[in-house]
Length: 395
Image 1: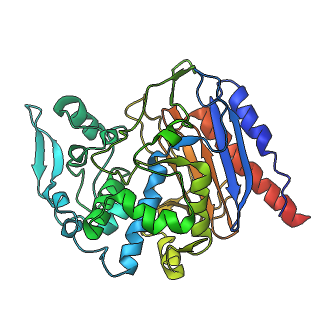
Image 2: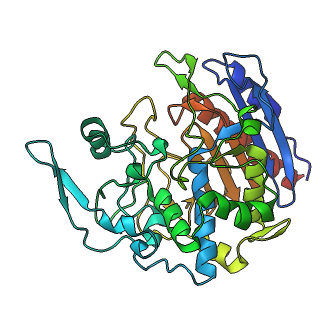
Image 3: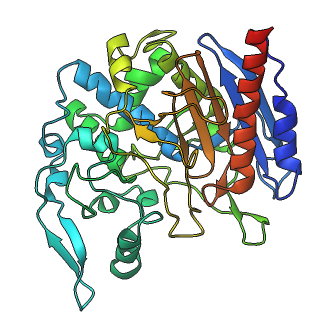
């Protein structure tokens, strides 16, 4: 279908209209191939290299859905029981306790959890983990007790207390890093190797990795910090290129084009161009809301340099699947109810609309998260796509 889609204008406007973004790559796919690919601006404001559709990005939390896919494959094979203690497969998770606050000396008050964390909890973000940039307790542990950040890609960064008993709440955090440890425990292989052989090869993904290489680094979009005055400053930022832990929650680098191949797999009931990744019945099961009556709310930004307060479609009901946000209502962009989507910390956003057979991805490299310029550009991009789809159907 040819759509009257003014995407190039949206990208250029997002780059050039104050406060602007340094550069952006955006794509839309149907079930067969990309129907739009665009890039605008620069890879970094401290150079003159143009952003191109093959630019590489730190993908941050868009990694999570790939980790969930690897876990679902193991469920299909009978090797992973979602309701067994996750410590069956990753023993260290069984050592973690629940934090109930701090005593008068500033020491954490800890107790045993009421039940074990399961892999289902990890996939649904109900295990009790948070992030220090979204949670004051974790921020205090980092500030006062030296709890390492997850971006260190270290085992020590994973050994955080639980913020509540497993299953009691939904809280976004390091759950998928632990899910990656579960996958490694079952397969006996590093997560990157599991991804390569079981997901990337069947999908034809060539430029996605936990260990940044020279070829990707030469095309890497630079990270930028948004100041309070709206100005953008280039940052020296890179995840460890030889990480101690392949962090299933945020650790991948890759291109938007390769991520579109992953999105197409979800549009095609688990099938890739070079083989099946998931069974159709697994995809149908996974895309459903698995939170019951629990709903997703705002993510409160408690470290201003890393995240603003953030929420998709405020005022609308949102759930969680294995492992995407589900918008329970038709979104104001035109995205239909039941669609899947999520984001990455440096203002990367995607959606998967299995009903209509389309998906899209918007990539920038800006901190803090929920950057007004990048997020508004993304919403304009998605809205323009659905407006053009509606017009094409009416024609």
